[in-house]
Image (cartoon, rainbow, N blue to C red; front, top):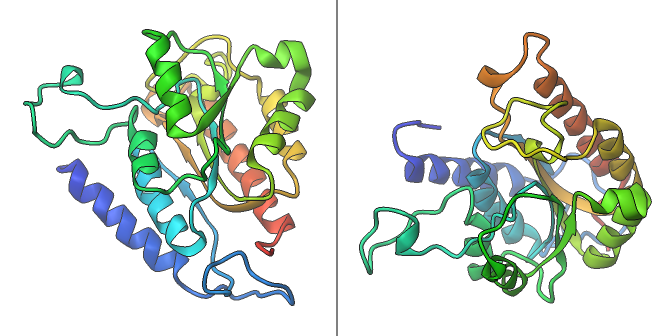
Length: 253
Protein backbone atom coordinates (compact mmCIF):
# COMPACT_ATOMS: atom_id res chain seq x y z
CA UNK A 1 0.00 0.00 0.00
CA UNK A 2 1.31 3.41 -0.90
CA UNK A 3 1.97 5.85 1.94
CA UNK A 4 1.74 8.85 -0.38
CA UNK A 5 -2.06 8.94 -0.80
CA UNK A 6 -4.50 7.48 1.72
CA UNK A 7 -7.36 7.21 -0.78
CA UNK A 8 -5.22 5.20 -3.16
CA UNK A 9 -3.92 3.05 -0.30
CA UNK A 10 -7.43 2.19 0.88
CA UNK A 11 -8.49 1.28 -2.64
CA UNK A 12 -5.41 -0.94 -2.99
CA UNK A 13 -6.36 -2.73 0.21
CA UNK A 14 -10.00 -3.08 -0.82
CA UNK A 15 -9.10 -4.67 -4.17
CA UNK A 16 -6.48 -6.99 -2.65
CA UNK A 17 -8.79 -8.16 0.13
CA UNK A 18 -11.71 -8.74 -2.23
CA UNK A 19 -9.46 -10.78 -4.51
CA UNK A 20 -8.69 -13.05 -1.54
CA UNK A 21 -12.15 -13.46 -0.05
CA UNK A 22 -13.80 -14.05 -3.44
CA UNK A 23 -11.77 -17.22 -3.86
CA UNK A 24 -13.20 -20.60 -2.96
CA UNK A 25 -11.77 -22.04 0.26
CA UNK A 26 -9.71 -25.23 0.14
CA UNK A 27 -11.94 -26.76 2.79
CA UNK A 28 -15.70 -27.21 2.58
CA UNK A 29 -18.37 -28.77 4.81
CA UNK A 30 -21.42 -30.96 4.30
CA UNK A 31 -23.59 -28.09 5.47
CA UNK A 32 -24.99 -24.88 3.99
CA UNK A 33 -22.56 -21.97 3.83
CA UNK A 34 -23.38 -18.54 5.23
CA UNK A 35 -22.07 -16.98 2.02
CA UNK A 36 -24.60 -15.57 -0.42
CA UNK A 37 -23.31 -17.80 -3.20
CA UNK A 38 -23.51 -20.93 -1.05
CA UNK A 39 -19.76 -21.56 -1.29
CA UNK A 40 -17.07 -21.50 1.39
CA UNK A 41 -14.55 -18.67 1.19
CA UNK A 42 -11.23 -17.84 2.88
CA UNK A 43 -11.46 -15.86 6.10
CA UNK A 44 -8.81 -13.18 6.46
CA UNK A 45 -7.09 -11.76 9.55
CA UNK A 46 -5.56 -8.39 8.61
CA UNK A 47 -2.74 -6.86 10.67
CA UNK A 48 -2.94 -3.15 10.12
CA UNK A 49 -1.84 0.26 11.23
CA UNK A 50 -4.50 2.98 11.03
CA UNK A 51 -8.00 1.79 11.97
CA UNK A 52 -9.43 3.28 8.79
CA UNK A 53 -8.52 0.02 7.02
CA UNK A 54 -11.59 -1.65 8.58
CA UNK A 55 -13.89 0.11 6.09
CA UNK A 56 -12.44 -1.40 2.88
CA UNK A 57 -12.12 -4.76 4.64
CA UNK A 58 -15.82 -4.70 5.56
CA UNK A 59 -16.69 -3.98 1.93
CA UNK A 60 -15.07 -7.24 0.90
CA UNK A 61 -16.69 -9.28 3.67
CA UNK A 62 -20.15 -7.79 3.06
CA UNK A 63 -19.86 -8.61 -0.65
CA UNK A 64 -19.63 -12.30 0.31
CA UNK A 65 -21.92 -12.51 3.36
CA UNK A 66 -24.07 -9.39 3.28
CA UNK A 67 -24.20 -7.04 6.31
CA UNK A 68 -22.26 -8.42 9.27
CA UNK A 69 -22.33 -7.87 13.03
CA UNK A 70 -19.17 -6.10 14.15
CA UNK A 71 -17.54 -6.71 17.52
CA UNK A 72 -15.35 -3.65 17.93
CA UNK A 73 -12.74 -3.78 20.71
CA UNK A 74 -11.51 -0.22 21.25
CA UNK A 75 -11.29 2.61 23.75
CA UNK A 76 -12.95 4.98 21.23
CA UNK A 77 -16.30 4.80 19.44
CA UNK A 78 -15.07 5.52 15.86
CA UNK A 79 -18.61 6.33 14.66
CA UNK A 80 -18.22 10.10 14.54
CA UNK A 81 -20.33 11.84 11.91
CA UNK A 82 -17.96 13.83 9.68
CA UNK A 83 -18.41 17.57 9.45
CA UNK A 84 -16.51 20.49 7.98
CA UNK A 85 -15.80 21.58 11.54
CA UNK A 86 -13.56 18.54 12.04
CA UNK A 87 -10.98 19.58 9.48
CA UNK A 88 -9.90 22.08 6.81
CA UNK A 89 -12.70 21.20 4.39
CA UNK A 90 -15.06 23.54 2.61
CA UNK A 91 -18.87 23.19 2.52
CA UNK A 92 -19.82 20.65 -0.13
CA UNK A 93 -16.30 19.25 -0.31
CA UNK A 94 -15.91 15.48 0.11
CA UNK A 95 -14.73 14.77 3.66
CA UNK A 96 -12.22 11.91 3.75
CA UNK A 97 -12.80 8.90 5.96
CA UNK A 98 -10.63 8.82 9.09
CA UNK A 99 -9.89 6.44 11.95
CA UNK A 100 -12.68 8.11 13.91
CA UNK A 101 -15.44 7.99 11.29
CA UNK A 102 -15.06 4.78 9.27
CA UNK A 103 -18.00 3.06 11.01
CA UNK A 104 -20.23 6.00 10.08
CA UNK A 105 -19.38 5.36 6.44
CA UNK A 106 -19.79 1.59 6.89
CA UNK A 107 -23.32 2.21 8.20
CA UNK A 108 -24.13 4.54 5.30
CA UNK A 109 -22.95 1.86 2.85
CA UNK A 110 -25.11 -0.83 4.47
CA UNK A 111 -22.17 -2.98 5.58
CA UNK A 112 -23.29 -3.32 9.23
CA UNK A 113 -25.99 -5.63 10.53
CA UNK A 114 -29.25 -3.74 11.21
CA UNK A 115 -31.21 -3.39 14.46
CA UNK A 116 -28.18 -2.41 16.55
CA UNK A 117 -26.60 -5.85 16.24
CA UNK A 118 -23.07 -4.40 16.55
CA UNK A 119 -21.14 -3.72 19.75
CA UNK A 120 -18.22 -1.67 21.02
CA UNK A 121 -16.26 -3.33 23.83
CA UNK A 122 -13.80 -1.53 26.13
CA UNK A 123 -14.95 2.06 25.53
CA UNK A 124 -13.49 4.51 28.04
CA UNK A 125 -12.30 7.65 26.25
CA UNK A 126 -13.51 11.13 27.11
CA UNK A 127 -16.43 12.15 24.92
CA UNK A 128 -17.22 15.67 23.76
CA UNK A 129 -20.97 15.52 24.26
CA UNK A 130 -24.03 13.32 24.46
CA UNK A 131 -24.41 13.73 20.69
CA UNK A 132 -21.59 11.21 20.22
CA UNK A 133 -23.63 8.55 22.00
CA UNK A 134 -26.78 9.45 20.09
CA UNK A 135 -25.02 9.23 16.74
CA UNK A 136 -23.43 5.94 17.78
CA UNK A 137 -26.84 4.36 18.38
CA UNK A 138 -28.09 5.65 15.03
CA UNK A 139 -25.08 4.09 13.31
CA UNK A 140 -26.13 0.76 14.83
CA UNK A 141 -23.96 0.03 17.87
CA UNK A 142 -24.45 -0.99 21.48
CA UNK A 143 -21.74 0.06 23.97
CA UNK A 144 -19.95 -1.98 26.62
CA UNK A 145 -17.59 0.19 28.67
CA UNK A 146 -14.23 -0.92 29.98
CA UNK A 147 -15.30 -0.49 33.60
CA UNK A 148 -18.09 -3.02 33.05
CA UNK A 149 -15.53 -5.74 33.64
CA UNK A 150 -15.39 -4.70 37.31
CA UNK A 151 -19.16 -4.96 37.71
CA UNK A 152 -20.12 -7.99 35.61
CA UNK A 153 -16.76 -9.65 35.01
CA UNK A 154 -15.52 -11.00 31.70
CA UNK A 155 -18.44 -13.45 31.72
CA UNK A 156 -20.94 -10.59 31.72
CA UNK A 157 -19.16 -8.90 28.83
CA UNK A 158 -19.22 -12.14 26.83
CA UNK A 159 -22.91 -12.57 27.57
CA UNK A 160 -23.62 -9.05 26.34
CA UNK A 161 -21.63 -9.57 23.14
CA UNK A 162 -23.41 -12.82 22.33
CA UNK A 163 -26.79 -11.25 23.07
CA UNK A 164 -26.11 -8.39 20.65
CA UNK A 165 -24.63 -10.29 17.68
CA UNK A 166 -26.84 -13.36 17.96
CA UNK A 167 -26.33 -15.90 15.19
CA UNK A 168 -25.18 -13.36 12.59
CA UNK A 169 -21.93 -13.61 10.67
CA UNK A 170 -19.39 -11.68 12.76
CA UNK A 171 -16.45 -9.43 11.95
CA UNK A 172 -14.02 -8.65 14.80
CA UNK A 173 -12.03 -5.42 14.74
CA UNK A 174 -9.55 -4.85 17.57
CA UNK A 175 -7.71 -1.62 18.24
CA UNK A 176 -4.73 -2.48 20.42
CA UNK A 177 -5.59 0.49 22.67
CA UNK A 178 -8.43 -1.58 24.14
CA UNK A 179 -5.61 -3.08 26.23
CA UNK A 180 -4.34 -0.92 29.09
CA UNK A 181 -1.27 1.09 27.96
CA UNK A 182 0.69 -0.35 30.88
CA UNK A 183 0.55 -3.67 29.02
CA UNK A 184 0.42 -2.47 25.41
CA UNK A 185 2.01 1.01 25.22
CA UNK A 186 2.79 1.18 21.49
CA UNK A 187 -0.27 2.89 20.05
CA UNK A 188 -1.08 6.39 18.89
CA UNK A 189 -4.02 7.19 21.20
CA UNK A 190 -3.50 5.41 24.52
CA UNK A 191 -6.22 5.59 27.20
CA UNK A 192 -5.70 4.48 30.78
CA UNK A 193 -8.02 1.99 32.45
CA UNK A 194 -8.10 -0.66 29.72
CA UNK A 195 -8.44 -4.43 29.78
CA UNK A 196 -5.61 -6.64 30.96
CA UNK A 197 -4.30 -9.27 28.61
CA UNK A 198 -5.74 -11.92 30.93
CA UNK A 199 -9.23 -10.41 30.67
CA UNK A 200 -8.88 -10.14 26.90
CA UNK A 201 -8.00 -13.81 26.51
CA UNK A 202 -10.89 -14.89 28.73
CA UNK A 203 -13.30 -12.82 26.65
CA UNK A 204 -12.04 -14.40 23.43
CA UNK A 205 -12.39 -17.89 24.84
CA UNK A 206 -15.97 -17.01 25.74
CA UNK A 207 -16.73 -16.13 22.10
CA UNK A 208 -16.15 -19.67 20.86
CA UNK A 209 -18.95 -20.74 18.56
CA UNK A 210 -19.53 -17.35 16.93
CA UNK A 211 -19.36 -17.44 13.13
CA UNK A 212 -16.37 -15.16 12.59
CA UNK A 213 -16.00 -14.32 8.90
CA UNK A 214 -13.07 -11.91 9.20
CA UNK A 215 -11.01 -9.88 11.63
CA UNK A 216 -8.35 -7.22 12.00
CA UNK A 217 -5.88 -5.96 14.60
CA UNK A 218 -4.92 -2.31 14.20
CA UNK A 219 -3.13 0.72 15.66
CA UNK A 220 0.00 -1.18 16.72
CA UNK A 221 2.90 1.28 16.38
CA UNK A 222 6.20 -0.65 16.75
CA UNK A 223 8.24 2.57 16.88
CA UNK A 224 6.60 3.37 20.24
CA UNK A 225 7.13 -0.09 21.73
CA UNK A 226 9.42 -1.09 24.56
CA UNK A 227 12.69 -2.91 23.86
CA UNK A 228 10.90 -6.10 24.91
CA UNK A 229 8.32 -5.52 22.14
CA UNK A 230 5.45 -5.96 24.61
CA UNK A 231 2.72 -4.54 22.39
CA UNK A 232 3.71 -6.65 19.42
CA UNK A 233 3.68 -9.79 21.59
CA UNK A 234 0.18 -8.90 22.82
CA UNK A 235 -1.06 -8.31 19.27
CA UNK A 236 0.45 -11.56 18.01
CA UNK A 237 -1.20 -13.60 20.75
CA UNK A 238 -4.57 -11.93 20.21
CA UNK A 239 -4.22 -12.69 16.50
CA UNK A 240 -3.66 -16.34 17.34
CA UNK A 241 -6.87 -16.36 19.39
CA UNK A 242 -8.78 -14.79 16.50
CA UNK A 243 -7.55 -17.48 14.13
CA UNK A 244 -8.55 -20.13 16.65
CA UNK A 245 -12.11 -18.75 16.76
CA UNK A 246 -12.29 -19.00 12.98
CA UNK A 247 -10.80 -22.50 12.88
CA UNK A 248 -13.12 -23.91 15.54
CA UNK A 249 -16.41 -22.75 13.99
CA UNK A 250 -17.19 -23.18 10.28
CA UNK A 251 -19.24 -20.53 8.48
CA UNK A 252 -22.37 -22.63 8.16
CA UNK A 253 -26.03 -21.79 8.57
